[in-house]
Each structure stands twice: as structure tokens, then as C-alpha cells.
Length: 275
Image 1 (tube, helix red, strand yellow):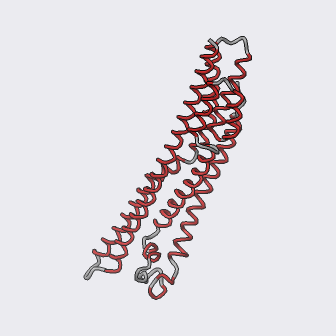
Image 2 (cartoon, one colour):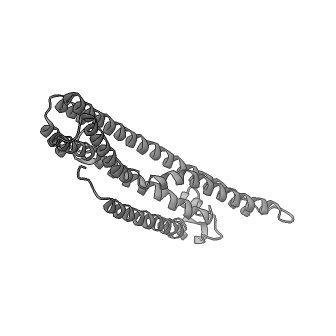
Image 3 (cartoon, one colour):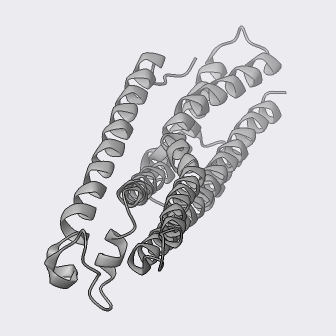
């Protein structure tokens, strides 16, 4: 079989990614709580300098967000998670794409295969780099190995090349898909957490209406404000998460298609030249 990273290496990388994801989630939640408490809850944002009992200064959005209640820091943390994981996936997937355009690279590989120039195709893989190039280079190495093995007939050799490409792809794909689960989860959790904050705010609003005598206008206003702010933050988090998730899955699908296209060309080239 062609040389490829051992499964133990993949496990170590997966373990490192899990640690990164866990630490990122914790840090984002902590930062969200600190921003809510000390930035949005700063006395300078409220009338009389009282964050707890004072109203936000006119037009002061930080003060308004602070009044959204205890669910707001959780939502801010989730929004930060979406941003951090999106940036991380952007760099990882771009690195996996390689130094040049993938479509142009695949066409070059197909041209070299048609000309029977395996060495030039491998050199192009070294120049391109990235996950796509790694998988194709693995298949080209296997191509060269089976050519030198007289014990294999054409069908066995073609199957060996195809299997090697599939194994190399299986080792590369988890690296591309890591942490996408977190972004996908935040699509739903962001909305549900915002809804929880909305319900909490509406409970406070109705409590203000239920006050004996004249309704407590301040409590009513705070309850409605909490409900709307949580709704808006939850929707914003989910919207960004679903957009980024769709962008990244589309990029990964494109890379997978390019690998399949180049792999098919390698197998077909071998089969046609060794009849």
C-alpha cells in the first residue's frame, strides 16, 4: 500500500482537535460573561450609574443588551464560538485546498496522466500541496508500485490503486470535517437559547402586568427588552452559523469531487495502458 499517515497519528490529531474545541467553548463562554458584566454592564451605560436599577442611557445599546438578562452572556459566548470556529475552519480548508486552484490542478494531473508522465504529476502534487494533492500523490505512488509488481494483473492493480486512494481520502476527510459539528449544533442551540431568554423575558413582563394596582412599567419594559434582545441575539447566532456551515460543507464537497475525479483518472489511465 502507498505510504500514508498511520491511524495512530490521525487519533492524536483528533484528540488535539477535541481539546482545542473544548477549550474554545469554555473560553468563549467566559469571555461572553466578562463582556456582559464589565463592558455592557458598565455604570457609564446607565442613568445614575446603576446597572441593576437604572435605565440604559438613551441610544446606549450596550446598556440595552445588558438588560437582556442572564441568558445574554451565554448567547454572546455562542456567537463568539461561531466566529472562532468559522475562522479556524476557513484556514484549515484553505490549507487543504493547496497553493493553487483545485480545478486547474486536477486538469494538469489528468494531462500528465494522458501523456504517461507520472513523475511530472507527482512533482505537480508537491507544488500544489494540501489534502487533495496528498491523496492524489498517494494514488500516483501506488500506480508506480503496481507497475513494478509483475504478480498483479490489470484488474488487481486497478483495484489496489483505487483502494489506496480511498484509504488516503479517509485519512484526510476527518481533518476537514472537524469542528463542523460544533457549528451545526450552534444553528439549533442558538435559536433555542434565544427562545429560552425570550420566554424568561416574557415571564417578567407578565409579572409586571400582574402587579396589584398600576402595572410596574419599569418591570414590564425590562421584561419585553429581555425577550427581544435574546431573540435577536439567538437569531443572529443561528444565522451566521448556518451560513458558515453551508459554505464549508460546499467547499469540502468540492474538494471531495476533485479527489474522486483525479482518482478515477488515475485508475482509468492504468487500466487503459496495461490492457
